[in-house]
Amino acid sequence: MPHIRKAVFPVAGAGTRFLPATKSVPKEMLTLVDRPLIQYAMDEARDAGIEEFIFVSAAGKGALEDYFDTAAALEMRLRAAGKVEALKALDCTRLPEGALTILRQAQPLGLGHAVRQAKNLIGDEAFAVILPDDVIKSEKGVLAQMIEAHRDLGGHMVAATDVPLSEISKYGVLDVASENGRVCCARGLVEKPSPHAAPSTKAVIGRYILERSIFDRLDALHPGAGGEMQLTDAINADVETVGVSGFTYDGQRFDCGSIQGYVQATAAFALDRADLHDEYSTFLSQKRQHLSLVA
Ligand code: G1P
Image (cartoon, rainbow, N blue to C red):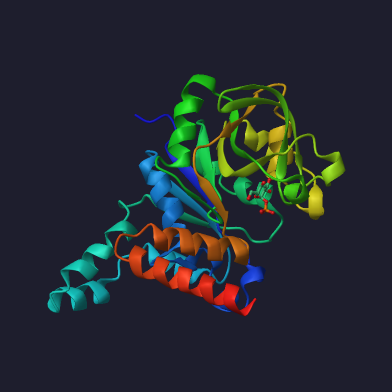
């Protein structure tokens, strides 16, 4: 049995940066090539052996819930028309009965508050948290990489990567005590520090493995950076007792919560598709040539 079986997906965010698209479409339903961001997150979780999926959602996210529901009328139509390939494309949206639970975060009080909503569903086991905005392109899924490393280590574990100092204030940041290969041991974490106050350039990326004790810390949490209840602060409070490690994953991460990251991810995933690669890369190089001519 995998030792991490449950994953929490905070999906309540408004996606203001993607207005007007997110006026009526949840940001997790924005599409990279032909599948929404949430599908990439779910695939990564399933590949890592996750069996129970908990969405912490909000009002206006109905499309997200429908996406993982059976679409009986659509399936019937496709079957009648003999559209076997189209039917097959829906396979990845099917989940075993009872595998998905959707909770509501009544108020947008921060990531720590969102994760706390799952307290009663987690039980006494370590669990994963996946932020679908962070899409990571890798051979082996990042959560699977982390679960393997966590098996020996235990404690809280966050995905980590080095970012330029000029970007550091967008992230939770690790105060690194020691480093051994892909794993570093943290003596502290700070949410969105200014560049001069940042303890390192090792940023937290949206994959976490958390021990049950995190809920005690979340219960005692006060608003932190930006006036929000920060998951980073709850993890930081467990540094001495539970232990916190950062895992430098193998993969390329795209910040799909920003338009720049989203557009880059679209290009990277399109170029990776055998059926799109040739035409798309020809298009891109023609575009580049045209730009250098007009420059
Ligand atoms: C959240 C976390 C932050 C982390 C980041 C990764 O911030 O609070 O610690 O570094 O995700 O994407 P947000 O992007 O929601 O501001």
